[in-house]
Image 1 (cartoon, protein in one colour):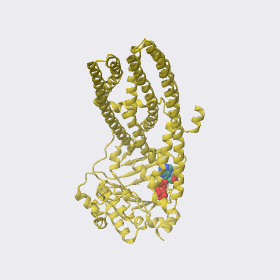
Image 2 (tube, rainbow, N blue to C red; image 1 turned 60 degrees about the vertical axis):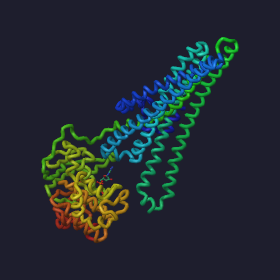
Image 3 (tube, rainbow, N blue to C red; image 1 turned 180 degrees about the horizontal axis):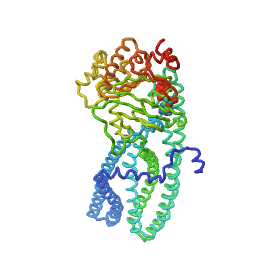
Image 4 (cartoon, helix red, strand yellow; image 1 turned 90 degrees about the horizontal axis):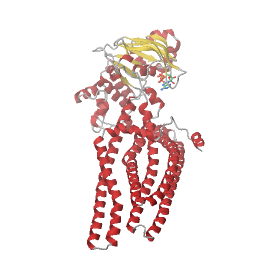
Length: 594
Ligand SMILES: Nc1ncnc2c1ncn2[C@@H]1O[C@H](COP(=O)(O)OP(=O)(O)OP(=O)(O)O)[C@@H](O)[C@H]1O
């Protein structure tokens, strides 16, 4: 059965010791040790109150009813009420402390996971869909919040009351307690066996939900492409399939959980009924008082209830352990791109010299195909080099390596004479400004988007960048100028306007090295001129590598480097390369000169 289950549901990288992975939560819990201790104290109080209730109950029956005195009744009921109030207060305190603890721990865990994910290298993010990562941050973290705030609390409380009630059962009636003890372990066995199966099912079920989420995330993120192809029914179909699979997988988990619970309850209450039946005979034969039997029944109910609660939360804990297992896996991912412990520092001011020495690089997902091969390029400070070549030639890869999103397999890259692997990552990336083909616009104001280039820039500096990026006209025409919210991914701006925001951002960053990926999409003549002028301002005095798609750009470049299949196939000026013929002449005819 288990073997069939394993082949049916492929589960990525198994987590060992299911419940054990929850131990990884401990360092996060320990950080809030005052809350933790407060919770334990409240737990001790509420458990004591719970376990005192049956005694108060017996006093009420045996002394209150049987002896019949008015004063005795008052005292017995007062005692019962006091115990109930103590239970209420302790329960409220316990709930408060443990819920707050859950919130704090999960916030810490999320922060830690987010910080880790955002720093992982490009290779990792190419392997993992962002929707799935978001699901780790939200669904799995949510699961853990439930565990701490509810399941763990219930588990500990039930364990304490279970042990307490067993002890009190023996104190109340040793021979009846002996009967009960046969039944209760019988109930625990199926829970443990069922739990193991449940853990696997739960993990598979969460994976399927993550799949569906990732799908929705991707298509909603590219909703225009979906609509432009009229692929709504197709996408809906795919999403439906993913949901159906998720529900089918969840159904198996729920079914297993239902069985485990049912079996546990039957066994526990079966045992209790049996014991009661025997106890009723004892009372009739005068071997124990009615109050004592009442006390015994209450302890048995509390004990049985605790086992039932444990059965339920045990399953919850297994579910959460699956979530924690996946979070732990993510936290264990190491970036392959790391800075040395003692990085070199770049000279200030920087000259902006770049060198690629015999660089060969394969993308991790494409180990067979070199994206760059024996790539040699030296760029002088202040020089503008245009990279041209057919699609897939490796132009963007040159940028990725320079920003150290990946490390080359062989060869090295140097900035101002320093191997970039010896530099601090933030310092290296701080020295490079990237203007991508498709600008990333965040759902924030125009000002915040531009200031992304340098967070501490003053308003005056932002204004100057806007001016230099030839963006003043369109920004002042926005309803609230620089403070206008741009909408997700800049939905409210045209392509040319988005580019000028990106240029203003790069201007503000004021880095000595500029990587420019020219937009291929055609802009209207006016927009094009504004963008071109903005770029010229930006390129002034900086070492620039530009992936060129426009004649104007290649004409202005100091040097043109022609790439094909990851190699440099020709170098020179526009005129020289045209005269040479070959790939450049062909590209120029198609791309620049039509
Ligand atoms: N993340 C990636 N994982 C695997 N292979 C990749 C990845 N990015 C690019 N490649 C491959 O590496 C090669 C070089 O790609 P690159 O993006 O550098 O080309 P390009 O010259 O910039 O092309 P384009 O002009 O179309 O943007 C291509 O064969 C491409 O398929």
